[in-house]
Amino acid sequence: METPFIFGKIATEKNFTDREQETATLLAHFTSLINTIIISPRRWGKSSLVNKASKLALAADNKLRICHIDLFNVRNEEYFYSLLAQKVITATSSKWEEAIENAKKFFSHLVPKISIGTDPTNEISINFDWEDIRHNPDEVLDLAEKIAQEKGLKIVICIDEFQNISRFGDPDYFQKKLRSHWQQQQHVAYCLYGSKRHMMLEVFTDSSKPFYKFGNLMFLNKIETKCLMKFFDKRFSETGKHISKEARLLIVNLADNHPYYAQQLAQLSWLRTKDKCTEEIVREAHEALVEQLSLLFVTITETLTTQQICYLKALIAGEKSISSTEVMHRYNISSPTSIVRSKAALIKNDILDKLAGKISFQDPIYAYWLKTQYFAK
Ligand SMILES: Nc1ncnc2c1ncn2[C@@H]1O[C@H](COP(=O)(O)OP(=O)(O)O)[C@@H](O)[C@H]1O
Ligand SMILES: [Mg+2]
Image (cartoon, rainbow, N blue to C red; front, side, top):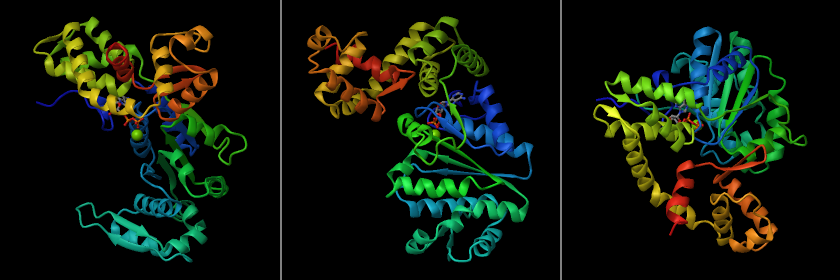
């Protein structure tokens, strides 16, 4: 039997809930070619949202083309250019023959090396001589605009894990180059999103950086309790099972409204349910989830310094004024500087999140594990 919840994949159709306002906004941005920047921690639903808005936008506007680029493992500029060229060409060609033709037609200085995958999708890949592209990236950066003009199209380029461009050789220079081309384009818009909040904020909100005020910033939140509650109810009943209101609320609370964990915990609870899911079943499912992740949590914790662990311990205990002498002493924290350093490193490593000055754990299950297992011993 098909299970009613999904996690770790893009949530679509009946697996997608809430986000009505964000979907409408993004849809409007896509069809009106407004640049958008989306920021949220990983697994909060950026890819799912972009996917949903893309589908709606494509259905609403037959002159629109959207391409999706993931910089997850793109480590240098040259590879970025190849990927950009390839995705733009593929998104604007209906057949691979046309793709090859376009790849030849739209470049004059660069000589693209084109190969076609042998899988049924026949996906083409485009490469350039790295020396050439390093000296002559303009053609790639303007490719979408040129194609859009020539074919009477509108193009939206979505780039995931955009913060990774700060790992490139000379990130500031690279960003300047991108911005100077992209801001001139009339028929192309960009949707840039990423999971590292601090790095994304640095790229887009620092007035000395090239991408300052490049587009509308969208901070994606977790999913609201009432939407999740309704969603669980619907998915359980659609599969011939039931879930009590208390159990639904418990899932939301244990997952701390985290979209991925909410679905995962709902799934584990659903699997344990014969007819009606109760709080007891949810608790069992939650314990199983913590157990399943504990090895990973041990590994994460092993990478932390002693001072970072002391700081986490004070946080988990709910200490309000950690920098007071008494609290620092109690948790073996060496100095206020140590707190500042630990906090910065933990935010950078995605363990903590800072929103409006408030520190929270990114992973609610990790926080629970620290509290009930690691620090309880
Ligand atoms: N709108 C949504 N409705 C329900 N679940 C969602 C939604 N968005 C995300 N999720 C859950 O979160 C998981 C991660 O979503 P994803 O879009 O890949 O996040 P991100 O791109 O931010 O890492 C999905 O697999 C799904 O379980
Ligand atoms: Mg994603």
